[in-house]
Image 1 (cartoon, rainbow, N blue to C red):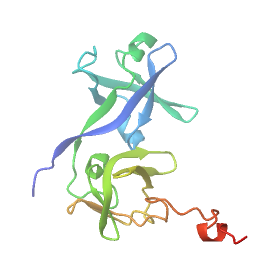
Image 2 (image 1 turned 120 degrees about the vertical axis):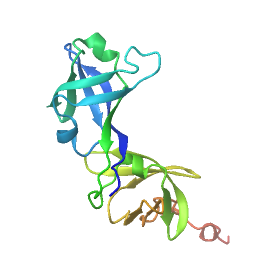
Image 3 (image 1 turned 180 degrees about the vertical axis):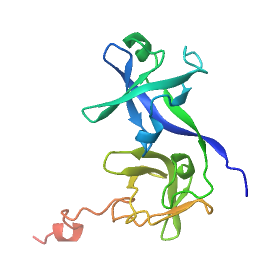
Length: 193
C-alpha cells in the first residue's frame, strides 16, 4: 500500500473587505465549504512577496453568509485596514490525496493542463476551472481564444487523468462559429434585372 500524497489545494480567494471589523468576502474554489471553512481551519496565503502577509497563515474564526455570499472572519484581522491588506490573497490548504477518491470528482489541480479532445482530435487545453452557483465551467484555451465549457456529463462525458485527457461532446457553436442562418446567400442576393 503506497503512502498518500500530500498536496496543496486552492480553496478560495479574498475579494474585498466587508464592514469595519476585519471581515472579508470570499470567492470559493471548493465544492465543500462546510468542511474546508470551519472555525480553526488554517490557510496558507498566496500574496505578493512585498505583502506584510507573505509567508504567513490565516486561521478562520467564523464563516457567515450574507445575501448568498460567504464572508470570513480571521484571527488577527480585526479591522477594515487589516482586511483591505488581504484583498486578492488566495487561500490554500494542505490536502492528503486519498487512496480511493470519490468517483467523478476531481480537484482543479488535476484538471488544469489536461488535453481536451473532441471526436478524438485535440481542440485545446484546460486553463482553469470556474466554480459558479449553477455548475462548474472548464475554461479551455484554444487557438482562437478561451471557451467556457459547462462541466456536466452531457458535454464532458469522460475525464481520463492517466491519459491526461478530457473528452467533450459540445453542442454546435461552442468551439466554432456557426453560419448566420438569417443572412441571405450571395447567389440569391444577385438578381437579374
